[in-house]
Image (cartoon, rainbow, N blue to C red):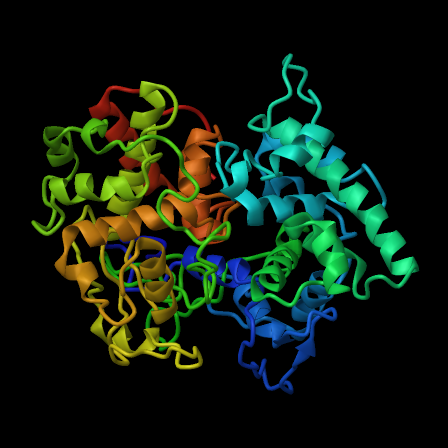
Amino acid sequence: MSAGSDGSGDGGASTALRNTAMAGAGLGCLMSPLVLSGAAVIVVIFGGLGILLAPLIALYLLFTSGGGGSEVTEGDATTALMIVQGDGKVDFDETTVPDDLVDPIEEAGQQCGAITAVVIASQIQAESAFDASKVGPGGRLGISQLPPKVFKQYGKDDDDNGEINARDAADSILAQGRYLCALSDQVDEALDSEAVLGDHLNLVLAAYRVGMDAVIAAKGVPAGNDIQQYILDIRSRFPVYAGIGAPPPTASPDSDGPREESDGGGGKGQSRRGGEGDSGKEEPDKGSPGSGKPGEEHSAPGNSAGFPVSESQFDKMFPNRNPFYTYQGLVSALSAYPAFANTGSGTLKKQEAAAFLANISHETGGLAHVVEQNTTNYSHYCDGTKPYGCPAGQDAYYGRGPIQLSWNVNYKTAGEALGMDLLNKPRLVEEDATVAWKTGLWYWNTQSGPGAMPGHSAMVNGAGFGESIRSINGALECNGGNPAQVESRVANYRNFTQILGVPTGDQLTC
């Protein structure tokens, strides 16, 4: 679940999952207040949405520096909170998105004064997690998930490839910018005539999601939780794309708090697979982007029979694995996310399979561990502030499986995505190999963690293996955070691609 499940750590907690939960939840609806470093509890009514928030909880998770469990300062939290509640008119950090998307995102953010590159990038993350191949509800296609009629109106051949295609990232992003600017003009008119009330940007984002007619009918942002959640989801990402986001807090190996390093099979504390805040939405909208439901974001045909790793190759990759991790369990789980290792060329399919297996090998010491080894951590993974609590028991949500799923919020979110009650029956992840593999595939295919996209998107969209590492542990390992852990993952990937007979591709490190 965390930075290094190769046995080098101490049963710690990674970061990605917690990031996803808090960012995906849009700072979290009705979150409990947080006392920050002795300061008074801060409760805010957010932007006229009528949702009671304690944003500093999310900011604490998003902006505390990793590696040593250092506390977020009030200054950092205040800055981030101002950005979240602002209009997105802050400098865009180009390093937070794939290189090939920097120009279209910046150009889309210059279409009008009301919409910025930070807004564009944050909305793309909420809509598709930067997956240009996504097929959404109602025929929505591509990275920006515009309705077909809207794309037909605003789409152009912005990448000059001779066609106007919603699956072309540049065409989609520039159409997104034009549409947002058109909606901005409509919102201005509606505000001037007092047909609607509320924050300008909130109204624009709501109109993008449900249409301007619905916003006018509601005389503002519609009251449904899904719309408000969508807006908060986007806003919560503003600091990240402004370049001030950081992994969630971690603690030293002998502390009682979340940890960043794995014990070789540890339930990484509050982390990507195991964080109280980065598994996905606290109460996932069953049909909304980012819920992680199998098949929801991937349209490729099932690949169970065509998995590009044979059983003999799997055995070679994991010669000392725990017998629990069966090859058949993995193959049976593939139907949950049919685009996995089934997108693009034969080489790309094998590269993605190798990338996934290399990362989970690192997380579990070569698939040696099914459950977290440090039992003293077990009681830490119950967030009692959640309305659903910990029905399986205070000690029941420790790390399990190839991705070392932990925390009650992540068991709930992953279970809902996979159509099973993991909140009440968390032991399924250590008792059923197929269920265990599905939780790993759930994270890989749908959760961005502290990165800009899920691991699946990183591989199929050309961002490379290094970007998949960022999606798992972000700055805890990347950008010099822990180069030894990065090299360990890369070594696994090199080994596995060699076994599969394919090149590694570029951009191996982060």
